[in-house]
Image 1 (cartoon, rainbow over the protein chains, first blue to last red):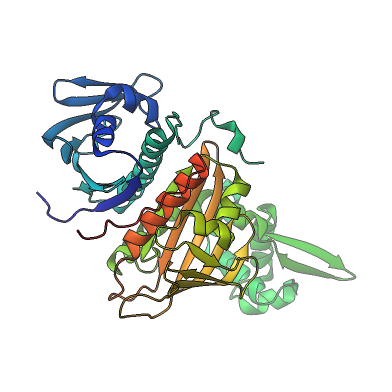
Image 2: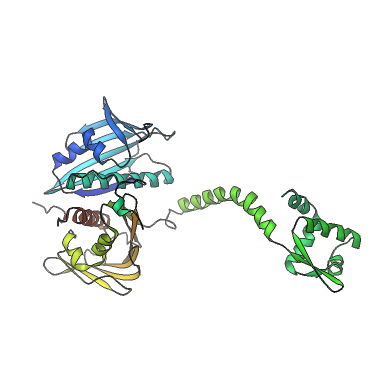
Length: 152
Length: 250
């Protein structure tokens, strides 16, 4: 296992540690804020996600979870032959807000890293909006929702 | 394109094209002097080049002048060379960037967030000091606006000491601001360069911060940007001020 993350994202969210933990583990909430995946569900210890057209998108198996603090899981895209990598969520409480750190290990191709970075940024933006406003806003690459921001 | 490949498939004809590339508009006599063959032979070759549209001719009086016609070759290159070359060239430049530690193509630091707000609201929030003061994690007084090169924004801690100054290097309204980043904290206060990129996407505003020329000893920049972006997003989406300051010890 590599020891140095290939990608790190850090965000700060105004919520309680319990609320952030819930949002990271409760599939109903995930379905509300995930930028692209649909029908997110647990299959045992594996988080299953589909694309909008119903095709399989992810099967991420939980490797280790420390409630309220840390989740380590595989990151296993289903749309191509990309070998599984590994993600870690770290939750820290800083008074009246939380710090969420996403670490991604085992990404070897820089191009893959770029796509992953964009995905995590959209995912984290949706999660933060969800927890702070209660609004489900999908920061997808292309969508007809959120038309008030459409260019032009 | 068959005619072009056929026309190019002969050293004498390639020599004729080379000659015309160097000196356009030559007569048959001019061209014959350069080739070791009969006048009739040169004429035959010129005819093939003309049929392939690689040269065009123009008659003036007794003389016929030959001109290179680059268009069919360009079309050939576009069709048969570039499509094969581009992926390799990309792979090579990619390899080069990787070997060179990616400093050529990637900023030292980059961070992106997406915000559910209008384009104007985001631009105002980034460029007006009095608005920055409403969401900044460490400063409740921010003086100045960023509208033109040379404009400067000063970030002040609550006790009045300067934390940071951003001076505009270049600005493209509603899309890009390039700034000198002049820190007032820590030991190493070497200025660096940062850029805000603002882009409207179908699902929200995309805001990217790029930071270059960061001295290795200047710490806390990544953490600061994460807090800054968290604050501006919260402020724009909820209308509330929340300072994502690091928790104080004790």
